[in-house]
Length: 108
Image (tube, rainbow, N blue to C red):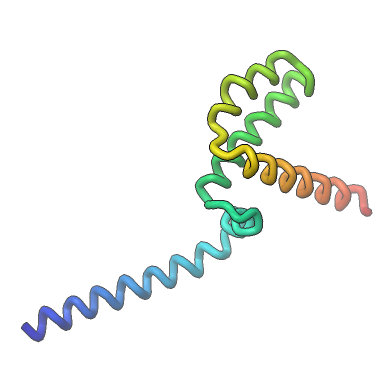
């Protein structure tokens, strides 16, 4: 009986140590940091990032006001957006990052 309790305690200790290790490791992930800044889950942040990249690619290929880019957004991207307010915040955040990157490249 004593060995069973020691075994369960050892398994519990390993689980706690692994949980702490993965929590600390996850904090270093840029997606986790950005999702935390935007106050949203990491899975939703990654979904928005995928949708944003797809939309930006369509804009680069077809143009900003093209029929193809608009149809892609209306038919494929917009139905997959779970929360429009989070999407708006994400787009503003991405725009801010791109603007900072552009200013840094220009030397401002």
